[in-house]
Figure 1 (cartoon, rainbow, N blue to C red):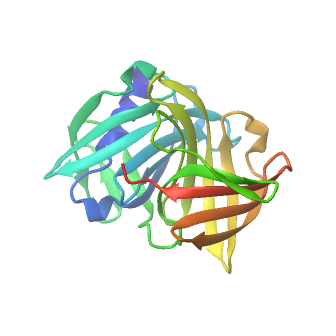
Figure 2: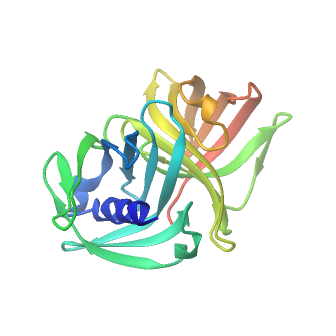
Length: 238
């Protein structure tokens, strides 16, 4: 618990210095107390949302995630927690940290640890925070409200993605997954590095057709289970 809490602080403190420099993804690989290599990924989006994910760097076994909104004021970063797999009681709380950031790395004076820049948010065409807004069922578009406490959110930097399903009212966490992605010639491709519901899914590659229609991300293909899907994602702005 103490180690994870330290990681949380390090991650939060990762949003430092100036907001332009923070946008994108940051990562580090280190050994835990048992000598297991763990990969830690931090994603910041321009809409003011962020997450950290921790997983076994070799097997893809999911370990931990937390995230929510972030706001920078000078050198102070304030996070409001929306999900936390280890400490759900933190959901709804706010924490402010002072952070140090260099051009290509983030570090914390009071702790040992450095995250290196993985991307700056500019590579992918879908960078940002998205909420599941609806689906096509039997050829009919069916939208749903995105204003409630139960959300399925997907955060994308320039090269990395993470989706998270959670409920801010009950503080319940339902699942997450993430890895790297590309957007080329109308194809959105995922390389899954971790999946909390089934660690065996780590390493699979998925391809989907994607199209932006009236600011809605149409996401069409087959799920990791092989089921056909046509999802509609909308940009999150609150």
